[in-house]
Length: 386
Image (cartoon, rainbow, N blue to C red):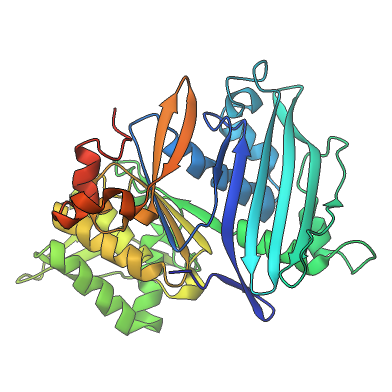
């Protein structure tokens, strides 16, 4: 099912294709015909997290024009380029977004520059209408070594000849609203266990630290949704009754109440898997206005009970009707929730990630014998195994 993604003016836009050359292990990969859900499977080190980090880079690059900070935080330019700068002096990317009236495309090249930075040596975009047979010409934004994306300026500047501001706005709006979520850190110093500003409640942060602020807002502004999230959690954590978030001097902290008792528990007394499921159940049931346009999950099954994994998969399928979801997973149980056509297999060959899709028709005999996608993966019939 195609998602109903972001609306620009009177049109909706969705991520349709992406090609990446030279980013970490993604030496030359391409995905096309992306639908509501894409499930990435493969062995450790095959490149699943690298694809998610690329979307993370896009968000930094277009949301706050902080490409330089992203590169510095992640080890410098040499660590972003496939095999290092001597092997791959530049990375290239081209992204396609589809609307009812046509196709929006954005491409750029980032080259290594001293000292260990990435600079733009090409940046361009275009819009090709569906009712025309030919592709539109590219609008070039320069390649003189600028350090931050100029398409953001094109989207915000007054209309001018030769620059389609609507196309620039469509592209930047969707790509800056790609959000990668990873709730793995549940250590004593994790964000889950800190007091948080009550007003930081517009969207759940990638690490889940502002979860109590989100829950506090939902309880007071959308109580029906708050109660539904509590019920979903109780399905896999029977002792759980409801969250009990209280404000003190503008701060909130995560606490919940147990069934059959007046005792409440903080994050420090909650299991790692339970904390992660609290964040996942909340994220996957947020109202549309509190969600990104492309939601990416990095191994969300970590530490979860099998029943929680299956329930999470059902939530993802429901959510994918409204936003695009890309999931990197190692869980056959989570894979079982999805169709073969939604699965992308990643394998590493000579340090290079390879993408492969499969068709249900190719495995019809196995499916007719009631083998599930997860079982086909475990038996190495799909590939993507160590």
